[in-house]
Length: 401
Figure 1 (cartoon, rainbow, N blue to C red):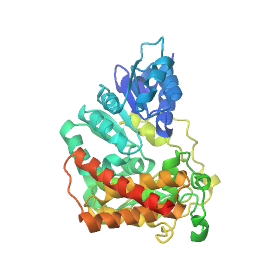
Figure 2: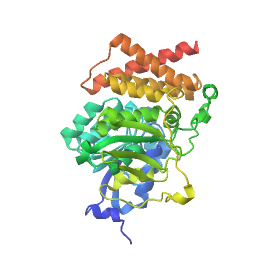
Figure 3: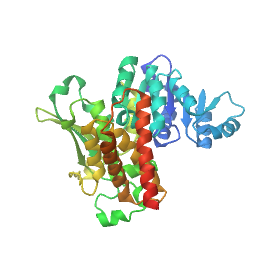
Figure 4: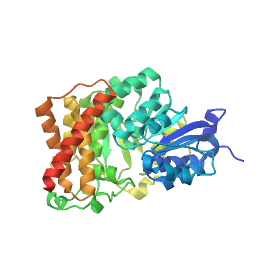
Protein backbone atom coordinates (compact mmCIF):
# COMPACT_ATOMS: atom_id res chain seq x y z
CA UNK A 1 0.00 0.00 0.00
CA UNK A 2 1.35 3.41 -0.91
CA UNK A 3 1.76 5.89 1.92
CA UNK A 4 0.64 9.49 1.61
CA UNK A 5 3.60 11.90 1.70
CA UNK A 6 1.67 13.85 4.31
CA UNK A 7 2.04 10.91 6.69
CA UNK A 8 5.76 11.61 6.91
CA UNK A 9 4.92 14.70 8.98
CA UNK A 10 4.58 12.47 12.04
CA UNK A 11 5.06 8.86 13.06
CA UNK A 12 1.30 8.57 13.70
CA UNK A 13 -1.68 10.06 11.84
CA UNK A 14 -2.61 13.61 12.78
CA UNK A 15 -5.78 13.92 14.84
CA UNK A 16 -8.11 16.38 13.13
CA UNK A 17 -11.51 17.93 13.87
CA UNK A 18 -13.80 19.87 11.56
CA UNK A 19 -16.13 22.46 13.05
CA UNK A 20 -18.76 22.93 10.37
CA UNK A 21 -18.13 19.73 8.42
CA UNK A 22 -21.26 19.75 6.23
CA UNK A 23 -20.67 23.16 4.66
CA UNK A 24 -18.57 23.86 1.59
CA UNK A 25 -15.30 24.26 3.51
CA UNK A 26 -15.96 21.20 5.64
CA UNK A 27 -16.84 19.01 2.67
CA UNK A 28 -13.74 20.11 0.77
CA UNK A 29 -11.62 19.37 3.84
CA UNK A 30 -13.04 15.86 4.13
CA UNK A 31 -12.50 15.34 0.40
CA UNK A 32 -8.79 15.96 0.95
CA UNK A 33 -8.64 13.78 4.05
CA UNK A 34 -10.37 11.02 2.11
CA UNK A 35 -7.55 11.12 -0.44
CA UNK A 36 -4.93 10.76 2.31
CA UNK A 37 -6.68 8.47 4.78
CA UNK A 38 -3.48 7.04 6.24
CA UNK A 39 -2.32 10.52 7.31
CA UNK A 40 -5.32 11.60 9.41
CA UNK A 41 -7.63 10.36 12.14
CA UNK A 42 -10.93 12.24 12.41
CA UNK A 43 -11.79 13.22 15.99
CA UNK A 44 -14.88 15.46 15.90
CA UNK A 45 -17.32 16.61 13.22
CA UNK A 46 -20.03 19.23 13.75
CA UNK A 47 -23.00 20.62 11.86
CA UNK A 48 -25.90 22.91 12.69
CA UNK A 49 -28.91 20.89 11.50
CA UNK A 50 -27.97 18.61 8.59
CA UNK A 51 -28.28 15.29 10.42
CA UNK A 52 -28.01 13.02 7.40
CA UNK A 53 -24.87 14.61 6.01
CA UNK A 54 -23.22 14.70 9.43
CA UNK A 55 -24.07 11.06 10.15
CA UNK A 56 -22.84 9.96 6.72
CA UNK A 57 -19.54 11.79 7.26
CA UNK A 58 -19.10 10.43 10.78
CA UNK A 59 -19.64 6.88 9.55
CA UNK A 60 -17.38 7.25 6.51
CA UNK A 61 -14.49 8.73 8.48
CA UNK A 62 -15.09 6.80 11.71
CA UNK A 63 -15.23 9.98 13.79
CA UNK A 64 -15.03 9.78 17.57
CA UNK A 65 -17.65 12.50 18.08
CA UNK A 66 -20.53 13.95 16.04
CA UNK A 67 -22.18 17.15 17.28
CA UNK A 68 -25.34 18.77 15.95
CA UNK A 69 -25.90 22.40 16.92
CA UNK A 70 -29.69 22.16 16.89
CA UNK A 71 -30.61 20.30 20.08
CA UNK A 72 -33.93 19.17 18.62
CA UNK A 73 -31.98 17.04 16.11
CA UNK A 74 -30.08 14.98 18.71
CA UNK A 75 -32.52 12.07 18.71
CA UNK A 76 -32.36 11.85 14.91
CA UNK A 77 -28.56 11.92 15.01
CA UNK A 78 -28.44 9.11 17.55
CA UNK A 79 -30.81 7.05 15.39
CA UNK A 80 -28.67 7.71 12.31
CA UNK A 81 -25.52 6.55 14.12
CA UNK A 82 -27.09 3.61 15.93
CA UNK A 83 -24.87 0.55 15.91
CA UNK A 84 -21.65 2.59 15.88
CA UNK A 85 -19.32 3.65 18.66
CA UNK A 86 -19.57 7.29 17.59
CA UNK A 87 -20.44 9.62 20.46
CA UNK A 88 -23.34 11.98 19.77
CA UNK A 89 -24.03 15.37 21.35
CA UNK A 90 -25.97 18.55 20.64
CA UNK A 91 -26.15 22.23 21.54
CA UNK A 92 -23.79 25.15 22.04
CA UNK A 93 -21.81 23.62 24.87
CA UNK A 94 -21.34 20.45 22.86
CA UNK A 95 -19.96 22.50 19.96
CA UNK A 96 -17.43 24.02 22.36
CA UNK A 97 -16.58 20.55 23.66
CA UNK A 98 -15.91 19.47 20.08
CA UNK A 99 -13.47 22.35 19.65
CA UNK A 100 -11.78 21.46 22.94
CA UNK A 101 -11.51 17.73 22.15
CA UNK A 102 -7.74 16.99 21.90
CA UNK A 103 -6.66 17.28 18.28
CA UNK A 104 -3.54 18.30 16.39
CA UNK A 105 -5.43 20.30 13.76
CA UNK A 106 -8.88 21.89 13.74
CA UNK A 107 -10.75 23.40 10.82
CA UNK A 108 -12.86 26.32 12.11
CA UNK A 109 -15.59 26.62 9.50
CA UNK A 110 -18.76 27.32 11.48
CA UNK A 111 -20.43 30.35 9.89
CA UNK A 112 -21.23 33.40 12.00
CA UNK A 113 -20.78 34.24 15.67
CA UNK A 114 -21.87 30.68 16.50
CA UNK A 115 -18.33 29.72 15.53
CA UNK A 116 -16.60 32.05 18.01
CA UNK A 117 -16.73 29.93 21.17
CA UNK A 118 -15.92 26.58 19.51
CA UNK A 119 -12.98 28.11 17.67
CA UNK A 120 -11.67 29.70 20.87
CA UNK A 121 -11.93 26.27 22.52
CA UNK A 122 -9.72 24.84 19.78
CA UNK A 123 -7.25 27.69 20.20
CA UNK A 124 -7.08 27.20 23.95
CA UNK A 125 -5.96 23.60 23.58
CA UNK A 126 -2.99 24.85 21.53
CA UNK A 127 -3.99 23.17 18.27
CA UNK A 128 -3.12 24.13 14.73
CA UNK A 129 -6.31 26.03 13.81
CA UNK A 130 -7.22 26.48 10.15
CA UNK A 131 -9.35 29.61 10.26
CA UNK A 132 -12.28 29.91 7.87
CA UNK A 133 -14.67 31.60 10.33
CA UNK A 134 -14.56 35.36 9.76
CA UNK A 135 -16.15 36.48 13.02
CA UNK A 136 -13.17 35.41 15.12
CA UNK A 137 -11.15 38.28 13.69
CA UNK A 138 -13.80 40.67 12.35
CA UNK A 139 -15.79 40.75 15.59
CA UNK A 140 -13.20 39.78 18.19
CA UNK A 141 -9.79 40.31 16.61
CA UNK A 142 -7.75 41.50 19.59
CA UNK A 143 -9.39 39.06 22.02
CA UNK A 144 -8.90 36.16 19.63
CA UNK A 145 -5.24 36.93 18.91
CA UNK A 146 -4.54 37.30 22.63
CA UNK A 147 -5.92 33.79 23.15
CA UNK A 148 -3.75 32.48 20.31
CA UNK A 149 -0.65 34.03 21.87
CA UNK A 150 -1.47 32.77 25.36
CA UNK A 151 -2.12 29.18 24.26
CA UNK A 152 0.69 28.79 21.78
CA UNK A 153 -1.79 27.75 19.11
CA UNK A 154 -0.82 28.06 15.45
CA UNK A 155 -3.22 30.08 13.31
CA UNK A 156 -3.38 29.00 9.65
CA UNK A 157 -5.52 31.18 7.33
CA UNK A 158 -7.85 29.02 5.23
CA UNK A 159 -9.55 31.69 3.11
CA UNK A 160 -8.02 31.70 -0.37
CA UNK A 161 -6.90 35.35 -0.16
CA UNK A 162 -5.33 35.19 3.29
CA UNK A 163 -3.82 31.80 2.55
CA UNK A 164 -2.24 33.30 -0.56
CA UNK A 165 -0.68 36.08 1.53
CA UNK A 166 0.43 33.51 4.11
CA UNK A 167 2.29 31.69 1.35
CA UNK A 168 4.17 34.70 -0.05
CA UNK A 169 4.66 36.98 2.96
CA UNK A 170 7.86 36.59 4.97
CA UNK A 171 6.84 37.41 8.57
CA UNK A 172 10.39 38.46 9.38
CA UNK A 173 10.23 41.20 6.76
CA UNK A 174 7.02 43.06 7.56
CA UNK A 175 9.00 46.31 7.54
CA UNK A 176 9.79 45.72 3.85
CA UNK A 177 6.14 45.49 2.81
CA UNK A 178 4.79 48.34 0.73
CA UNK A 179 1.32 46.93 0.32
CA UNK A 180 -0.80 43.81 0.72
CA UNK A 181 -3.27 43.52 -2.15
CA UNK A 182 -6.37 41.38 -1.75
CA UNK A 183 -7.99 40.33 -5.01
CA UNK A 184 -11.75 40.17 -5.51
CA UNK A 185 -13.60 38.53 -8.39
CA UNK A 186 -16.26 41.24 -8.30
CA UNK A 187 -19.01 38.64 -8.03
CA UNK A 188 -21.96 38.17 -10.39
CA UNK A 189 -22.83 41.88 -10.58
CA UNK A 190 -19.44 43.28 -11.51
CA UNK A 191 -20.74 44.90 -14.71
CA UNK A 192 -24.37 45.27 -13.60
CA UNK A 193 -25.99 48.69 -13.35
CA UNK A 194 -27.36 50.00 -10.08
CA UNK A 195 -30.85 49.88 -11.53
CA UNK A 196 -30.53 46.20 -12.41
CA UNK A 197 -28.86 45.44 -9.06
CA UNK A 198 -31.88 46.97 -7.35
CA UNK A 199 -34.00 44.24 -8.99
CA UNK A 200 -31.53 41.40 -8.40
CA UNK A 201 -32.93 38.14 -7.07
CA UNK A 202 -31.36 35.73 -4.56
CA UNK A 203 -30.87 33.21 -7.38
CA UNK A 204 -28.87 35.75 -9.35
CA UNK A 205 -26.86 36.85 -6.31
CA UNK A 206 -25.69 33.36 -5.34
CA UNK A 207 -24.64 32.50 -8.91
CA UNK A 208 -20.94 33.24 -8.43
CA UNK A 209 -19.02 33.20 -11.73
CA UNK A 210 -15.91 31.50 -10.33
CA UNK A 211 -16.40 29.91 -6.91
CA UNK A 212 -18.79 27.29 -5.57
CA UNK A 213 -19.81 28.52 -2.09
CA UNK A 214 -22.70 28.61 0.35
CA UNK A 215 -25.55 31.09 -0.06
CA UNK A 216 -24.46 33.56 2.63
CA UNK A 217 -20.87 33.96 1.47
CA UNK A 218 -22.03 34.08 -2.16
CA UNK A 219 -24.28 37.05 -1.38
CA UNK A 220 -21.43 38.68 0.56
CA UNK A 221 -19.27 38.25 -2.51
CA UNK A 222 -21.96 39.86 -4.66
CA UNK A 223 -22.09 42.95 -2.40
CA UNK A 224 -18.28 42.92 -1.87
CA UNK A 225 -18.94 42.76 1.89
CA UNK A 226 -16.97 39.53 1.85
CA UNK A 227 -13.93 41.44 0.63
CA UNK A 228 -14.51 44.10 3.25
CA UNK A 229 -14.55 41.47 5.99
CA UNK A 230 -11.37 39.97 4.54
CA UNK A 231 -9.76 43.42 4.67
CA UNK A 232 -10.46 43.53 8.41
CA UNK A 233 -9.17 39.99 8.86
CA UNK A 234 -5.97 40.84 6.98
CA UNK A 235 -5.37 43.71 9.40
CA UNK A 236 -5.21 41.23 12.29
CA UNK A 237 -3.44 38.40 10.48
CA UNK A 238 -0.74 40.52 8.85
CA UNK A 239 0.02 43.58 11.02
CA UNK A 240 1.64 45.84 8.44
CA UNK A 241 -0.71 48.77 9.10
CA UNK A 242 -4.19 49.56 7.78
CA UNK A 243 -2.83 52.02 5.25
CA UNK A 244 -0.92 49.21 3.51
CA UNK A 245 -3.99 47.08 2.82
CA UNK A 246 -5.67 47.37 -0.57
CA UNK A 247 -8.25 45.61 -2.76
CA UNK A 248 -8.22 45.15 -6.53
CA UNK A 249 -10.88 43.53 -8.74
CA UNK A 250 -9.56 40.52 -10.64
CA UNK A 251 -12.49 38.75 -12.37
CA UNK A 252 -10.61 35.59 -13.36
CA UNK A 253 -9.81 34.66 -9.72
CA UNK A 254 -6.42 33.24 -10.71
CA UNK A 255 -4.24 35.54 -8.60
CA UNK A 256 -5.55 35.12 -5.08
CA UNK A 257 -3.59 37.94 -3.46
CA UNK A 258 -0.30 39.80 -3.75
CA UNK A 259 2.38 41.31 -1.54
CA UNK A 260 4.31 44.32 -2.84
CA UNK A 261 7.75 44.98 -1.30
CA UNK A 262 9.74 48.17 -1.01
CA UNK A 263 12.24 47.05 -3.65
CA UNK A 264 9.54 47.06 -6.32
CA UNK A 265 8.96 43.30 -6.24
CA UNK A 266 5.41 41.93 -6.14
CA UNK A 267 4.91 38.33 -5.06
CA UNK A 268 1.63 36.63 -5.89
CA UNK A 269 0.05 33.23 -5.36
CA UNK A 270 -1.77 31.85 -8.39
CA UNK A 271 -4.04 28.86 -8.74
CA UNK A 272 -7.34 27.66 -10.12
CA UNK A 273 -10.38 28.77 -8.09
CA UNK A 274 -10.63 25.62 -5.95
CA UNK A 275 -10.83 25.88 -2.16
CA UNK A 276 -9.05 22.55 -1.79
CA UNK A 277 -5.78 24.30 -2.62
CA UNK A 278 -5.71 26.73 0.35
CA UNK A 279 -7.29 24.13 2.65
CA UNK A 280 -4.60 21.62 1.69
CA UNK A 281 -1.88 24.13 2.56
CA UNK A 282 -3.23 24.39 6.10
CA UNK A 283 -3.90 20.65 6.38
CA UNK A 284 -0.37 19.60 5.40
CA UNK A 285 1.47 22.63 6.76
CA UNK A 286 4.45 23.07 6.91
CA UNK A 287 4.56 20.70 3.93
CA UNK A 288 2.30 20.47 0.91
CA UNK A 289 -0.02 17.72 -0.29
CA UNK A 290 -1.35 16.65 -3.64
CA UNK A 291 -4.85 17.88 -4.53
CA UNK A 292 -7.17 17.27 -7.50
CA UNK A 293 -7.37 20.99 -8.26
CA UNK A 294 -7.08 21.87 -11.96
CA UNK A 295 -3.57 22.85 -12.95
CA UNK A 296 -3.15 26.32 -14.39
CA UNK A 297 -2.62 26.74 -18.11
CA UNK A 298 -1.78 30.42 -18.40
CA UNK A 299 -1.48 30.25 -22.18
CA UNK A 300 -5.04 28.92 -22.37
CA UNK A 301 -6.31 31.57 -19.94
CA UNK A 302 -4.61 34.16 -22.11
CA UNK A 303 -5.40 37.31 -20.18
CA UNK A 304 -5.62 38.43 -16.56
CA UNK A 305 -7.44 41.71 -15.92
CA UNK A 306 -7.65 44.10 -12.99
CA UNK A 307 -9.65 47.18 -12.03
CA UNK A 308 -10.34 49.31 -8.97
CA UNK A 309 -13.54 48.53 -7.04
CA UNK A 310 -16.53 50.81 -7.66
CA UNK A 311 -17.49 51.99 -4.18
CA UNK A 312 -20.64 53.68 -5.44
CA UNK A 313 -22.14 50.42 -6.67
CA UNK A 314 -20.49 48.34 -3.93
CA UNK A 315 -20.57 50.52 -0.79
CA UNK A 316 -20.14 47.53 1.55
CA UNK A 317 -16.40 47.53 0.90
CA UNK A 318 -16.17 51.16 1.99
CA UNK A 319 -18.27 50.43 5.09
CA UNK A 320 -15.86 47.72 6.17
CA UNK A 321 -12.86 49.97 5.59
CA UNK A 322 -14.51 52.67 7.73
CA UNK A 323 -15.31 50.16 10.48
CA UNK A 324 -11.67 49.11 10.49
CA UNK A 325 -10.54 52.74 10.69
CA UNK A 326 -12.89 53.52 13.58
CA UNK A 327 -11.79 50.48 15.61
CA UNK A 328 -14.62 51.06 18.09
CA UNK A 329 -16.82 48.00 17.82
CA UNK A 330 -18.32 49.13 14.51
CA UNK A 331 -16.97 46.05 12.71
CA UNK A 332 -18.79 43.75 15.14
CA UNK A 333 -22.06 45.64 14.76
CA UNK A 334 -21.70 45.88 10.98
CA UNK A 335 -21.00 42.18 10.62
CA UNK A 336 -24.01 41.25 12.76
CA UNK A 337 -26.26 43.61 10.79
CA UNK A 338 -25.00 42.18 7.53
CA UNK A 339 -25.86 38.62 8.61
CA UNK A 340 -29.45 39.68 9.30
CA UNK A 341 -29.61 41.64 6.05
CA UNK A 342 -28.36 38.74 3.92
CA UNK A 343 -30.84 36.35 5.56
CA UNK A 344 -33.65 38.84 4.91
CA UNK A 345 -32.59 39.22 1.27
CA UNK A 346 -32.45 35.45 0.75
CA UNK A 347 -35.95 35.28 2.25
CA UNK A 348 -37.00 38.03 -0.23
CA UNK A 349 -37.95 40.44 2.56
CA UNK A 350 -35.58 43.18 1.38
CA UNK A 351 -33.87 44.03 -1.90
CA UNK A 352 -30.25 43.46 -2.87
CA UNK A 353 -29.19 47.10 -2.46
CA UNK A 354 -30.92 47.17 0.92
CA UNK A 355 -28.22 44.86 2.32
CA UNK A 356 -25.52 47.52 2.34
CA UNK A 357 -28.01 50.29 3.17
CA UNK A 358 -29.11 48.37 6.26
CA UNK A 359 -25.52 47.80 7.42
CA UNK A 360 -24.72 51.49 6.90
CA UNK A 361 -27.76 52.65 8.87
CA UNK A 362 -27.02 50.32 11.78
CA UNK A 363 -23.40 51.47 11.87
CA UNK A 364 -24.48 55.12 11.82
CA UNK A 365 -27.03 54.52 14.57
CA UNK A 366 -24.40 52.75 16.67
CA UNK A 367 -21.97 55.64 16.31
CA UNK A 368 -24.65 58.21 17.16
CA UNK A 369 -26.12 56.38 20.16
CA UNK A 370 -23.14 54.53 21.58
CA UNK A 371 -20.20 56.55 20.31
CA UNK A 372 -18.37 53.28 19.86
CA UNK A 373 -17.51 50.74 22.50
CA UNK A 374 -14.51 49.03 24.05
CA UNK A 375 -14.62 45.31 24.70
CA UNK A 376 -12.24 42.93 26.43
CA UNK A 377 -14.21 39.69 26.75
CA UNK A 378 -16.17 37.37 24.53
CA UNK A 379 -19.35 38.39 26.36
CA UNK A 380 -18.68 42.01 25.39
CA UNK A 381 -18.39 40.95 21.75
CA UNK A 382 -21.60 38.95 21.91
CA UNK A 383 -23.40 41.93 23.46
CA UNK A 384 -22.33 44.12 20.54
CA UNK A 385 -23.27 41.39 18.10
CA UNK A 386 -26.73 41.15 19.66
CA UNK A 387 -27.12 44.93 19.46
CA UNK A 388 -26.30 44.88 15.75
CA UNK A 389 -28.74 42.05 15.13
CA UNK A 390 -31.52 43.75 17.06
CA UNK A 391 -31.14 47.02 15.16
CA UNK A 392 -30.97 45.17 11.85
CA UNK A 393 -34.12 43.18 12.60
CA UNK A 394 -35.93 46.42 13.45
CA UNK A 395 -34.76 47.87 10.12
CA UNK A 396 -36.11 44.86 8.21
CA UNK A 397 -39.43 44.97 10.04
CA UNK A 398 -39.82 48.69 9.35
CA UNK A 399 -39.06 48.16 5.67
CA UNK A 400 -41.60 45.35 5.43
CA UNK A 401 -44.37 47.31 7.19
